[in-house]
Figure 1: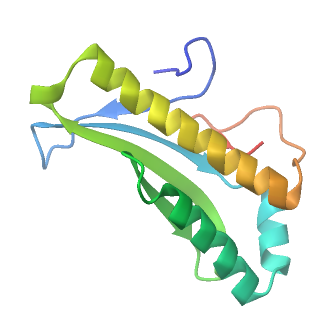
Figure 2 (figure 1 turned 30 degrees about the vertical axis):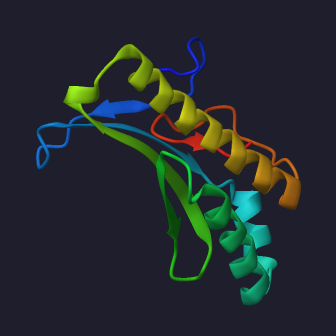
Length: 133
């Protein structure tokens, strides 16, 4: 589904086969190539400090995140999820999850843009994840 409504910011609502009573709202952001290049130019300690700040800022949110960091130490994408069980399924719960994931996406975009500048983007972002812009 698109959230916010009317945008192309996609979030997936899924029910994992392994957990039949669970509902997961899933979205993510791919790190722009320009930002990956700039991350690569940082020293290992500075890059680690940057990632640690993001982790500390996100740790107490109600949604979860997973930062995909390649073997080279460069973040490739960040995925967000909001999980709840069907016994808690309400419109309010659904939109809370969508909003939390969207705010987390905006936070990541802002942090990367403040650190590395706004990248020049291709005109067609991927459907499954948003591109940091």
